[in-house]
Length: 180
Image 1 (cartoon, rainbow, N blue to C red):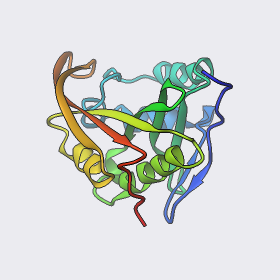
Image 2: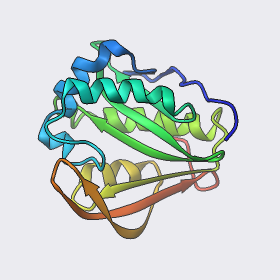
Image 3: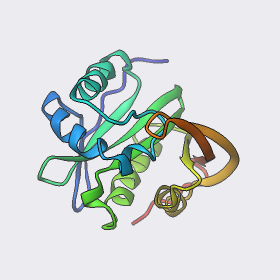
Image 4: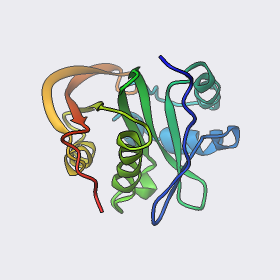
């Protein structure tokens, strides 16, 4: 890896993507702590505690090549979108949004901005991701942004207490089309 990458601050018409901060811990717990959110994520336990949120916020310092953006709608954090380093030119996309904000196109807007940053100033060639087969909302967002579905896989779900079928997804710089 090269030198650490600084988390950008990105603005969309309705959102600001910014570096998470310690003051976000309570909002993280209240939003990702809902089973409907946690159960769609491959690395989040349920129940999700304040200690879990603080550990995640503090652990980001240990992963200087990862980009994690708090999604803020002006009222505070409503979700997170991240690009975890795979190698210098490839990142792994992950995202979640609090249930009160579902169904308004906010996640497509946020992830679209992060992907645009990745293929623009971020200098990436490839973004990989995955989703549970039953997470149709996530799969729709990926499709809208141009991600190709690949092989089926099995993804762990600490919240579900088991592993479940999932799908691998990918998008290359060559296949990406910016959304206006």
